[in-house]
Length: 92
Length: 92
Image 1: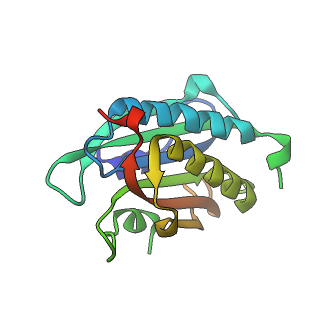
Image 2 (image 1 turned 135 degrees about the horizontal axis):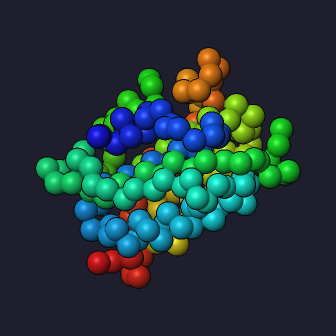
């Protein structure tokens, strides 16, 4: 399944939760999966400042996708983050 | 231009730089643009821990996109982040 199909995929089963979807693609082949992993953890921490995240339902994939600028593949991170609620300061 | 076309758009002109592309879509209508703005700033800070960002070339758009779960639109954040270099600890 291509990245964008992954992004558009309907949320399967489970309690209909609000979701935040994150897609991060680096067109740098040597941006290692470890760096993407560290970025992912930091981004989840950022988001949890504003929203209550349902950690069990977190769906995160670090995959490879076709590079736009070269023939190779580049690292891509896709996260589907179920949100239980916004934190007070984030409410409109 | 839809979100994914924006995401796939070739980098126009300027020095060919490595880029990190970020797409963040909330399917929560009341996740205000202010919250997306705050999340954006925090995510840029996270990424700049690992990579030298060319701040001038930063292309960030907070827009609305069709919700998957309702008829309305939901906030979406798209960032095209030119990377000058990885920081030492991120290199493979």
